[in-house]
Length: 397
Image (cartoon, rainbow, N blue to C red; front, side, top):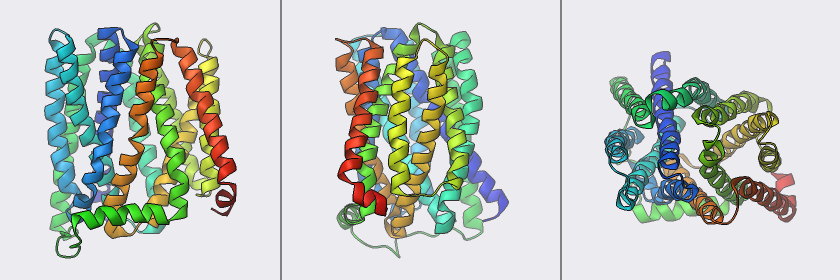
């Protein structure tokens, strides 16, 4: 693939990634400040993450059609959804309006959940297996470098122009990413790089789903990462839904600072990923460290040390994401790549809304700091138990 096409792929992917991240952070902040209710914020986050469960039904279509076509549809719907959210957030906030907002967020999150497996599937068609980890590391690093620059301004933007106006930036970035993807699609077809899969891969829709599940079930190395990722998503779902409440008294700049530090750590982790061996043992150790750093963050919120722990938390998260994605890509047959990656994302999406709902319920009885301590402690315990149960397979992996 030439440099021009490679650059188009990176820039379009990064633009869409930033737009999606801005949308998520701003909408969470808007709901928290408009309602001043942690439970509403948690349930909104639950609605957004729950959408990912249903992308399992899209996987076979990604494998049978061009992933770029799926991406086109997703981006068009995303822009329309954002215009709807701006209108709803500008209207008087009632219980009915909140329900409609959650429905729109659900649809938008469903589209977002489709984009990433489709994009990653397309990535595997551009690179050979030996470049999967290096490619994932490059994309993760560039994503977070650009996210860092963008989120450095989010707190200031929210403070001076407001949440709704900041959402227009997200619309602009989605639109920019869409047009770059159009150019990429045209360039690939011109170079006869793209081919339709319909004539090559004629397996039925149902068989594709069944075989995708069998691939995950029968490969030990894939089974070992799933429960770990499931509980990690539950903990992260609770953590993200708590962040607006934690940061509310300190202001939007503090809120965006947490993300900035996290992204900085993520960049460091992505750069280090090529220096570490990709195996199950490393992933388990990093996952346990994530729980430890989250616990230390929750106990040091009033000091600057809390930001150091978020930095380490971000670094470990980056390494886990890159290693886990690489393991799935390396062990999945190319004809089932979209099916398996969407199935994985759908399964993981089960736990994030559960974590957010649990936080929403606990918020009625406990303060945010105590809830965060409970989340971090439970993750440390869960990862330790999983290590003990799977010790033999972990060492071999």
